[in-house]
Length: 63
Image 1 (cartoon, one colour):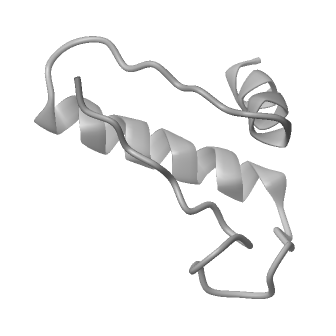
Image 2 (cartoon, rainbow, N blue to C red):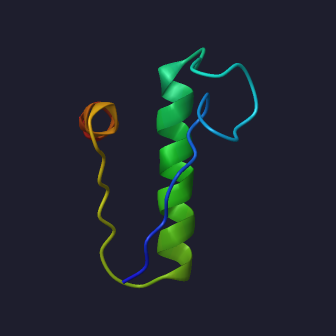
């Protein structure tokens, strides 16, 4: 099993103003790009997990 941790826009070491994401759809597009890249390099299922607000973000992303 491979595990990948994301540094989302506006968090930790990402560029831009900390705690700010001008457009939520940009974050969803970032997640899609990462999932696509993982699927190209690794076989099997991809499971997305989040804690606290990260879980809420994933629920919105998946809906």
